[in-house]
Amino acid sequence: KLELKRVMKALSLRRGEPAGAGDQAQQQEGLTTLVSQTSAVTSSVTALVDTAEEEALKAVEKASDVEAVVKVMRAHVGSAAVQKLSCQTLTRMTGDATGRTQAGKAGAVEALVDAMRAHMGSAPVQEWGCKCLVSVLSDNMENKTRAGNAGAINATLSAM
Image (cartoon, rainbow, N blue to C red; front, side):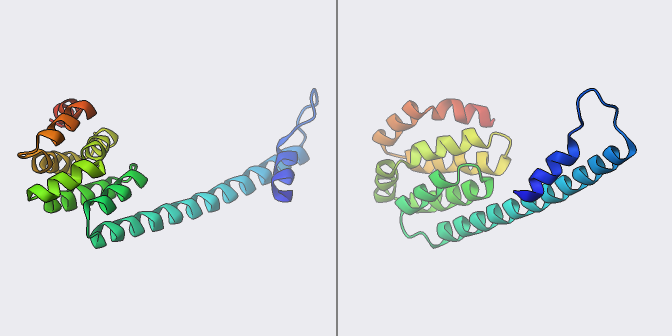
C-alpha cells in the first residue's frame, strides 16, 4: 500500500503548474515502479492459473466417473486444455448405455455445449466436443432431448 501511494504521488502533478524536471523524474520513477509491480503481479497470477489448470488436468485423468469429469468441466470452463481432455475422457466413459445414462444425469450434455460455446476458436475442443456428443447421444432419447434444450445443434453448427 505504501509503495502504491508513493507511485500515485509521483504520478500526480499540481494543477495549473507546469511539470518541472523533478516532477518528470518522479513520474518516470513512479511509472517504472508501477510497471515492475504490475509485471510481478501478472507473473504470480499466471503461475496460479497454470497450477490450477495442471491440477484440473490431473483430476480429469484420475476421474473414475462421469460426475467427476463434469465437475471439473464446470469449474474450469475457461481452459481449452481442460475442456478438450474432459471431452476425450467423457467420450471414452460413454461408450455404453450405462455411461450415457450417467452422463445425462450428471449434466454432461450441458457441460459439453458450454465447452463448445466457450472455445469456439479451439479446433480440438470443437472436434472432441462433437465426438463426445455423438457418443453421449447414441441410443439415448433423454440425452437427445437435453442436447436440444441446451443448444447443441447451434453449438455443433458453429463448430463447422
